[in-house]
Image (tube, rainbow, N blue to C red):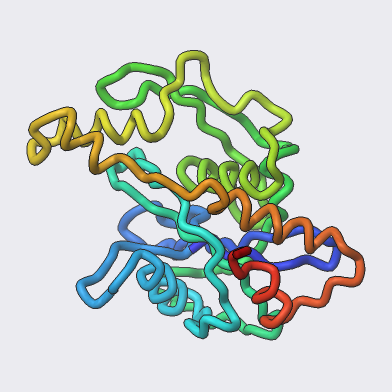
Length: 242
């Protein structure tokens, strides 16, 4: 779950967690709430809502936590395909309830920082068998650095939401798109036998006025000094125009 909420200063904050130090993987690292789809989940949205509730106690009430967009999938260095789902947390009275087995801290970070920096460092790594460089970023935060896949997702959300590229060079020279990376990874996996199959699985077409349009309208509303956040105003803001 990419959980956004309005700050007092008129911009968006991101809800982040620090994974418990007893976790088997990525212990003590900054992460977005989320996890693998379970058999009972009817959609990726339901997976995101369930995981956020289990990890952080974020209500599954659709009026209080409204889905904004499903982004194109990312491939992690652990070879997992992850599809981020963006939500707006409209109820400012929500009180998180931590699952201490998975999360030891919940904190927020301003979304604009992923466009303007500062970031602690950037570095390039060869991506799997392609040996093509992929640029990674590390952003400082008040609890633990925001790195890797989490940083990638939040840069993308900021780019979509604010409608512009970051102030820094986002990609390495010759860096492949995430869709190209996923296509290559799927083609190399034994269960995908052809380029056509891999491309079909990797393809993730979005409506022209999908996440970019929705998030842009949210940010436009945030820029109005008299905006009052409520479900009714969000409903008017995000209902499709006929």
